[in-house]
Image (cartoon, rainbow over all chains, first blue to last red; front, side):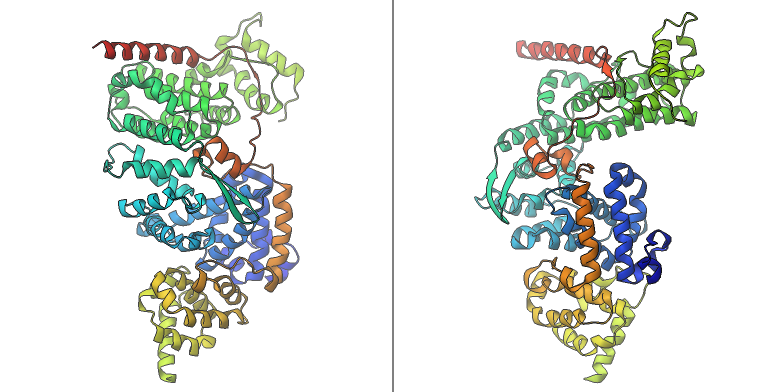
Length: 418
Length: 191
């Protein structure tokens, strides 16, 4: 096996246990996989992360070793953030690895903390370890952290900036029905705001300054958003607060929280049954999130896709169709804000799977776009537009309609790849 | 003493000998003691490589106060591991050598393990070369502008795949909602 590896044929070593048996075989295989991610970006993550994490999580030693190797690359100033993402993907998979078997994931918290530099702050480290291992916040440890982060020489911001930690705080503050002791609430809000906006300046391995310019406004935004989301108001009662919600949504951390709250709210079986507005308020909030935060586009799209695929059996068939059109309007909004290829790809998938009402895809055909188009866009979109089943009824014999014009423009200016 | 060392070796083999579950190191934590660690030192060389590896990984799950208490014994075992002929054992020993005293992992392992050095040097070049491939860290969607900049650098502008001929329906909907909202707020004030 080592000879195969030394000869450069890592791709031939397909068995995880074979690859993991010797460290001198495992290391080049790890290198090949990491290179694939560095060269392929997000697409490679979608495609290869399950296989990669299976190998890295084969044993605690392979996990420790791989994380150490990736961590030493993640500290690079140029390009290191790509590696940081990879470390996080593996961490997330490890935590969820055994969820279906024994109810909990692998406990990788000691490795995560030992790598993070948290040991220099033993009290903070202890509180973090207790919460991260259990994946649950508790008032005592939050109080310890709050006090430490209030001091003039607080622990490193990175210690509380982990995705797992941020997610726990967002759930605590924005999941409907979670009861938070009012006495402790400001501490949760403070820590979440601190993690999301404070910037440290480092020189030669020393922390030189802590910039908290955005902290106060971020605290206010989270607090206001939390208050509105936890009051359990219906859409009509919330109308007067739309301005406030929109201003909170300007802060990414509050937008993430509100998105979570919208997700829970509209996923409630009775939500669309009880709502009589053509476009319910919560869905309009999704538009506002898309407008403010390109980094949240995919999360908004994921929610919209889930809604689009829900059956809503309890609603009248025509109401169902109208609702789906309303959801599609949100994706058109996403499209107008720059989330283009993921939206078109999804619609194309719907058409190819043949499980979506054709009238909905027809509804999606746009009249808001104009040239110049990119090659990628035309490759994806033209087949949809050219399909007779979808757009046949929208075309005229004279070919002076927007559909025919679009087809003619693309045929003249672009070469289609089969 | 020899009989007791044999007992400890057998105990470790029973607890950690399975190759089916390579995450089971932590299962022995509650049964560790200074005496046990001393006995382990005696029989360490005779243990199977994967038993040695799992034993060392158990140290990561030992409560902090015990780590401080048993620092010397733990370091002794890690020292033996670093000189082991099995590369996994030597590497894990090297990574964990700073753990008992500092609570950190030793990231400076390049010079002792040439295969690691070569791969990291290669990948470091690739990391720098591919810096514009944006796999954003998962915390980025939460971050304010300055914090985002510090974590992931300047974000590139999204590709403009087409021009917008006119605003989508959502724009009118937003304006309408804001109008309704200010009316509702005004009514609430009046009442």
